Length: 294
Image (cartoon, rainbow, N blue to C red):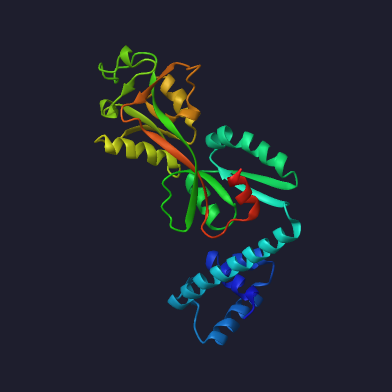
């Protein structure tokens, strides 16, 4: 069985015959013939072709699952052999969210580049959910994500743990409880449940820190009343400064030395988050392994 035909089947599954043919740069009739030939060879139908749509059969889904593993093993073998040939050369693909990457990666990338000048570093910025998907499909070698990571296919190496802060508006607002007073400024601690009725500014779906905030609120006995959603922790803090709500930020994103129209207070439970290097279990190229070790 030709691995190329496995790639054809996967392309059809992920798109359809027309789009797959365009992506593979082959004629659609040729692609259809190749898939049909494979089905005759196997004696099984891989796709149901009816009513203008195409869906994998149960046998097709099993074939697709196994073909993905085989092609991934092939790609890993080729990468490994390429690394053996090049030594400390090649590529390193890293992913992070924008704020985390800005604080965590530059200095570490600089140290790594000094030690491995022949390695090309490629940086991807995306949401936590998107980054996990890119690690799983092999688009990137590793990502910096907040723990926990629940997918069993992913392994992690803890990088750092940092405290979390509540961000409150400097100016008086009608919705902020009177119990939140000057005694919490600037370094006091506040119980989250005091803010149960306050409007919250949170990150959008797909960002791991959103889940961190929701989990903290849940442990305090309430679900946050969402006023605004954003993809930027910086935007969230600016909205707080204008009196639109409260938010929670990790220490690396807090402007503790130069707050602008906001003030920061710790959380009574001493809440923290842990960032980790996350990679596909059993698949870590040497360039990525060296980065983690450094």
